[in-house]
Amino acid sequence: MVLVLLAKVAVGQGKSTKGTDNRLMYRWLCSGRIPDLSQVSQPVFTRNVKVLSPEGLHLRSASAIAAVAKQWNADIIIRKGDQQANAMNVLEILTLFALEGDELVIEAAGAEAEPAVEAIAKLFENGFTLPPGPAEHCEGTSCK
Image (cartoon, helix red, strand yellow):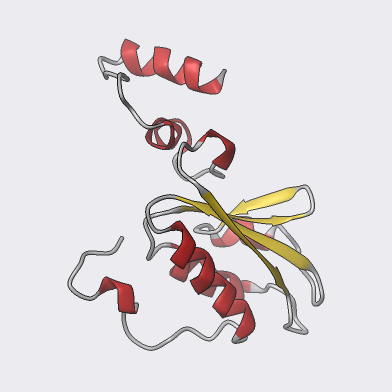
């Protein structure tokens, strides 16, 4: 229903929706909001992680997650129970109120979804330490 409404809005603005990927249409609708990965036509990759830090997810760890998420061409969300947050948005990540021991699910769709999920999961495993310099996958290409 959302995509139908979006298609009507896009056509009303003179934009053609024929052959448009659902993911792109979704981004038109709510850029900066939590992506609805059920509407994406590409495979979705998930990985369960556990918050190991005694402080839980705090500002520094949320910033590290967002920094890594922005390097990939993928829509990434983090789930805690029935709550979810856009992995590129520090404030949304903080609203999960994830404490030490909490189980989270990293979920992504897009061209680089699988390596994006693995990179964020590695942050959880390494105590949210960012590697120095640009990401390895960015060499010779342009990253976001």
